[in-house]
Amino acid sequence: MERPTHDVEYEQMLLSRHTFLSRRGGRRQDGVLERSAYILLSRIRVQGPMTIGELSDAFGLDASTLNRQTAAATRAGLLERIADPGGGMARKFRITAEGSRLLDEEREGIVEVLDQVMADWSDDDIAAFAGYLRRFNHGIERIGGRPWPRP
Image (cartoon, rainbow, N blue to C red; front, side, top):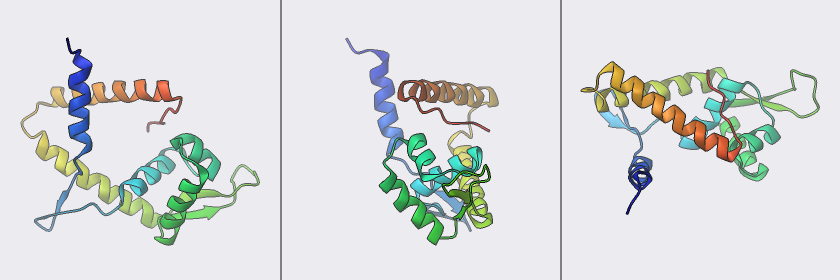
C-alpha cells in the first residue's frame, strides 16, 4: 500500500520541472536571473554579507562550486567583495544595488505568475499552502542541518 508521501514525492517532482516564466511587455519570458544566482542573492540578502566558507556551509556545496557561482555573479555586477565588516580576515560577498534590483524584479515576476496560478484560490487557501510549504521546508532544513533564515 502506498503512503501519502508517495503523492507528495510525485507532486514535488512535477513542481521541480517548472520554471516560473513571467509576463513582461505582454509576452512570456524567462526570468532575469539564473536559478543559482537567484538563490545565492536571496540568501545573501536575508543573511547579509557572507564568505565563501559561510556560503559553502549554508548551501552544502563545495567551495569550488561557490567560487564559480560568486565569480559569475561578481562579473555580472550582482555581487561585490568587501572587507569583513566584523574585522575578520576573509572577504565577504555583498549584494550590489544592481543585484538587489534584479532580485526584486525576478521575485516580482515569479509572484505575478503565482498570482495567475492561484487566481481562483482564496486568501485563506494561499496562506494555508504557504504554511504547509514553510513547514515542509523547515523539516528538510532540520534533517539537513542547514536552516534558511527568513525575513
